[in-house]
Image 1 (cartoon, rainbow, N blue to C red):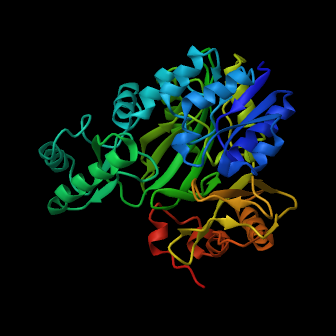
Image 2: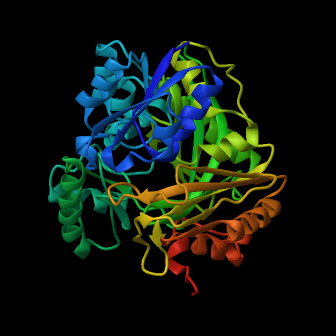
Length: 446
């Protein structure tokens, strides 16, 4: 087992990893930018190293500085969390070259799944259902036009190196394709340094359902059931739950089997997520694979009593998994609390938190790195907390979430707490009747 792990991340996920490491008797090293000097992950790690100024490219994305921090603290492994360098094949490779175990996928596995066009071809060969689309990348506008005519409108243009909704455009008729193609390429190039595009058939009224998988170094893979992530705004998830109210035992078995097939096709090692779009008839299609821990991993942990961070560390240390598949025994909901103003088009709201009161009680979990007096910097993702409730039934989990949101007090900045509170009262949400288009019709009341 590892002696000391450096966490190449910040905020709540860094603190989450530190907690499990401490329970396992493993020393931790936090890295931080000057903007994060007062963050709780810095306070609770055994050691902390400043790696640069606030801009991510000069700190959390600066590979030489992170490797140097690991070397001067004698860390023997690096956990990347999510975001930043968690799916960077080059970083995974550099860690290995410097005698550091990267707690995550191998460079080869990241490369196979990181490029979405390549990932789709890999899944097709493995026999995993895929959305009809282009054969590889769209080299020219002419190829895009021919592809759209072949698969039929509506279509979705996607950046091959994309994420977070960047470089994506829905196109409903031929006349709009050229402008959408050019705009998506420009955005993708600016966001990822790669303007490669591919095309898929646009699935109308879909659910976004993902399957959590874990694989070890010996070829074993298991799945830990599903999470429904369909409540989204601009392709960014707002809340998630497990089990999905849309799921059936037959669909869960089929999707679990496909996810395991996907992971085994690349000899996957570690915790990962296979994401699917599911249409109204419960046909499912591979969308992408995230070769890292997910933001929403706590709800899976809650319903099967399973520490995914601990499992990641054990797998990286060479411990075999049981190979057992899991099904949820309880119901769990997660609300992402962002420093955003939901009454002003979810505009970011950085600044000092003047009052902070965390909700508690049976079945309530709060993952956060903030506190009264903490200053939220404007340099990073706006998520500041994850509120999770768990109960015997979905109805009870919603009731518990209402109560927890009412208890949750954050003053000094704007947050998405009011949005989530209204969501918990929405008739369609209560009925489990929602798709990825839900937010287009949602009206927030002041």
